Image (cartoon, rainbow, N blue to C red; front, side, top):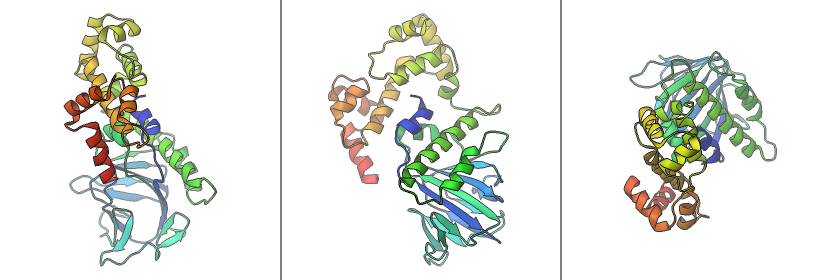
Length: 314
């Protein structure tokens, strides 16, 4: 499981925020929600994403944008339009004078805005958390990215636009999974662009030696891997594997494996139904003490302290 797979197999969207918004005339929102990641797509019309100190990004029909928290930003019909609405943590919508706007601007099931048939229709999806593996990937992104129809196939956006306003049984689960798939597809398209600068571990996935080694360790973290055993499974010598790994990732294979195991453990510790001992066994440590020692070395806190910290901020 690589970091992209971790977005689906790790901490998934659960009751993620999804909304279809419809706008006419001048409009602007100051977004202060600070979610880990927000997706924005134009199913009709266009809008701008404005971060302070950065060039505004125009999002048009068929485009798909991702913003990375916790930065605040503005979404508007034009870069010069002053915001009249603020979106606070918890998706609390208020006017600049503090007047609540959730009910006043409601347009039906998961629909909101100032006009039910607006010139611009924008789909918004937001994640509060991705877990350790997903956030490792998100941290490599700039504050905002945009994919055009030339960059990817946006069919999923059309499907989500149709599904988001439905209120069928199990609809929240359907929407969560659609949003997960949409995000993974978009991120893969972003990193695969000819001019992209993906993180080293992402590029290394396509290397015949290091990519094979990465998949072995990521998919089987509980195995007692050594450089020799990974090299044998990869079909090269220890020296070749170590040299190639350092060239592409800047660290030895076992150092990468240790970090990967701790990231997996950090995600699993979010689950209250797993003991520290069960987590240790699943990620390749023989005892809870061994996991605790490695966890403290890389994170500075114990697994139990990490679990308490996550619970306190949930």
